[in-house]
Length: 306
Image 1 (tube, helix red, strand yellow):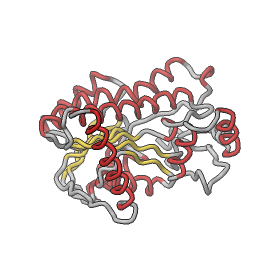
Image 2 (cartoon, helix red, strand yellow):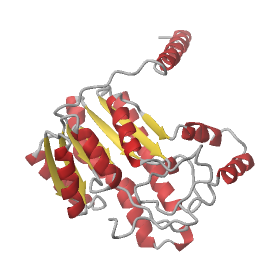
Image 3 (cartoon, one colour):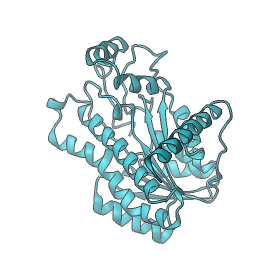
Image 4 (cartoon, one colour):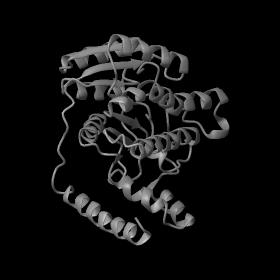
């Protein structure tokens, strides 16, 4: 195909894809049936992980829950069972340890079967200025928030590729799109999570494995306790998000094969403006929205909450 024909084809398809997107703004997308699918959720012992387990359970799935908190895992498994899960399996797993991820993944494949929906949700935050953060905490942030994604993909993606069927869900953050004062190591890990998920998604498209879907979730702060103490200057634009609302939106994104989910919707605009505004104007906007002070009163989740 010569360059002229390729150009015409690209223009026509671009027009069609834009019209398609406009239609789906008013016409709901068809939700896929995931009954019987094996869903693995990391960091499932509390917070969004626990709520997502209950959401997926209601759709007659087989759940595999991972966490380092045994008591939290047991409670999440109980709640998921009560919500209607076909079966619930829970495993202690430190996702920051590559060898442990591979060991527990092999156990899951032996005892449960191939995972077809992988939700990388486990995450931690130091909440310290970069210069004040101990090296060990910075390393742990990277190990949990991004390196764990490498190991879980390595463990479970081959079966999805072989079957040309599956779904990879990355719970990243709006801090993976826009840098935040006081969250340097966290932002680095979440920027990496977004880039990694995007790149693997493109690899799947390039190799024709269009049956393996990806969803990248970038929410603002959620009221799970992880960011306790953080305040928002403009709650009408950047509200602290309700955890149950976020879990429902994530499930809907998975069921409709939505590639990017940003919450609240203002994040779509803010992320776009970041790339087109002059730097000084971008800083001014950040100051106006209170982004420079959002971590000033950060406390984080207490040990009792965990």
